[in-house]
Structures are given as C-alpha cells and as structure tokens.
Length: 328
Image (cartoon, rainbow, N blue to C red):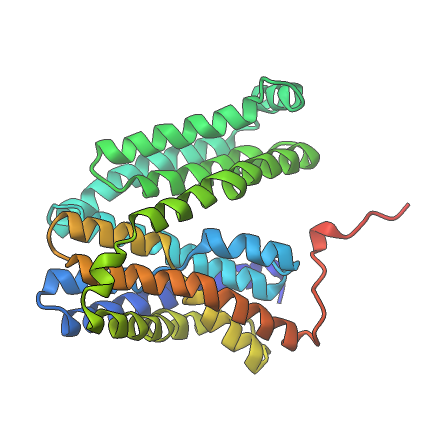
C-alpha cells in the first residue's frame, strides 16, 4: 500500500471511529444524566482525543512518521476537530440547523482562504519569510499569529468556539508554509513548536490545574468513584473505536497502545465542561470528575502506550525518518 493510500485509509477510519464514539457517548451520557442536554455534554466530552499532547510524545519517541504514528495522528485529528464541530452545532446556544448553517459559513470562508493559499505560489511571502527568518522581523511567525487571531475572532463573531478558528488557522498556516523551501519551513515549524509546546501548552495545563474545582470533587465521595468510572468510559467510548485506524498487521501491543492513545483527552473535556457549568447544564462536581478523568488519561495513558509500543518494537526506540543524518 502506498503512503497516500494509507493516509486516506487512516483518515477515513479515524473519522468513522470518532462518529461511533459520538453516538455511543451521547447514548451513554443520556442514560447517565438527568436530562438529554446534560447527556449531550457528557457524550461529546467522551469523544475527544488530545492531539496536541500526543504529537510531542510521538515525536520524542521517534514514532511520529511511522504508519502507527500516522494512525494515531489521524485518530487524534478526528478526536479534536470532531468535538469542536459538535460543540459549535449542538452546544452553541442555537438550534442544530442554525448551528450547522453558521459552521457552514465559517467553513466556506476558511475553505476559500485555504484553497487560495494552495493555488498560489506566493513568491512574495516565501521571499519575505526567507529574508526575515534570522532577523527580528520574523515575517512567517507574525503571519501565523495574525491568521490565528483573525480566524479566532471570526469564530467568536459567528458565535462558534474559538478553538475551531485556531484549528482552521493551523491548517491554513500549514498550506502557506508548504510552498517554501524545506529548510525554511522546518525552521519556522521548529519556532512555532517552541512557542506552543514550550510556553502555551504548559500555560494551558497550569490554568487547568488552577481552575480545577477540587473542593467540589472531594465534597461528595461518590464523585471519586465517578472519576474512576469516567476513566473506564474513556477507554470504552473513545479508545475502542480508535482501533479502526490501527495499521494492518499490527501486534496486540500496538492495538492496546492505540486504544490508550485514542482515549487520551483533556483540552476538549475542559472546554465542554466549562460551557456546561456556565450554562447550568452540568453540576460543578460532575464537571470536576470529568476533568479529573481527562487529567488521569493524560498522565497515565501515553506512558502505558509508549511502554506497549516499545515492547512491540523489541524494546528499541524507533528512528524518526526526519532525523536520519544525510550521508556525504
């Protein structure tokens, strides 16, 4: 199977797995909750995968560009973008039909921008990026920040979650950088990763810890048990459907690792529960239990998945194709 064919297969199975997670999650949420809308909040929270957490883990392991790493990435992309769409359509404070129309408007605007960027050679952009790459100008970095701010503001104006705008900005930035020289593109991406993984991601986890309602969680002992139950539900609702994206010929250890990676979710859980508490649809204690389950998944699941992945590879770290030195 050629690489483009494999990527298409992985993407399709990633989205199929997410749709199964959404259906099962909403059904389970409604069965557990006191109202249907509360069940929808719970169900969407259980469909998330923390792609931003998994990418640096896979890269550091040298597994990002392997078939397994690409399968995890496809699953994570569906598990991050899918819940954002669900939030915008079902939890945006409007009817689902109106929500779909607003999302369609945003998609058209973002899609046109991405299409124009992919169709144009943009020699001026590439030249400015090269000229300012080693100066204080940093044209490419400032352009990415401008796109991030612009599409985030657009999503807020349309009444959508700003994370949807941030996701679209990332896709547009990727398309813009695709036409530049490989060495320049890699340097820009390295700088963006330094800002993201070195500063913004830690700030997110710090703020998650600061805003975590521990008092609401420990006030009712049953919520501690609910937290553990929620961890199990993450494995069932999100982890098992993620197995659809596992590459053919994978070992049992690889499948278990995919299940754990797919069930790793926190950012979307924080966003969904925050909306639910703000609107009075979710109890603060229940929200704390769900966020706590997300925290445990981020702390435990990737470490266990890496251990299983190493066992599958005979205990050796994988070599990332991008890190192979050039001979001669």
